[in-house]
Image (cartoon, rainbow, N blue to C red):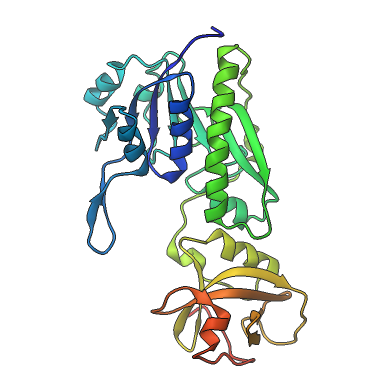
Length: 316
């Protein structure tokens, strides 16, 4: 099987999926079809917009399937018509039924955005930062009916940098996922990709984030809030209120400054940033987004507005 070319159906939707699909297109295997979510309205004009994976697939001349329902015999028959050896999934956005998981002879392989068994679920990249992980990665895994519970085939990791956000780590791991996928397929061709069972006792969950998850509890430590702000960037963002106005926070650092002020109190605000007291230590941010305005540097905000030491940020 060393020189075998696999017939692959690819299932993916957002930007995270694009490097993996591009890697397959550039690789030795044959992508027979791409399955992605239906076009969605976007922006203020609610213009119907195709998923990034669809755009790439169409530019490569690959047939695109956009089912509204995936648990139908009609959809399963459509997939079978492409005679796939395996199905590869990368952030498709829906849980696959056993009728699809069992369809290809070699099963379904997923590119999961964490080092399993940590961070099983829909938001693994955000939760890696929220948890303060020093290392993140992807796991090429064999899919089963559980939520990211299948056997691991190939992990790949990178260090998490102090200034990484969910957005920057998302980009890094999407690229890593494409490279790891090609490596896994080459090993599979050589029959050198043995499955490894997950240690379920070490599993953690990574559920979808909600807007209210971004509300800052200033009684937590500067380190915890540092992780929260980065993990919520670019969505749903971390926020707090000052005099009833919402402020969103970006680009945090843990300050060496000390203070006796209550958690949430402004310690200092100048061209170097905004320093705020926490339950343990001081947190500084260099960018904010005041309510009704665009994201800007603290320095730019202070050109027209005042932030005074002692003013108090609150949860509402």
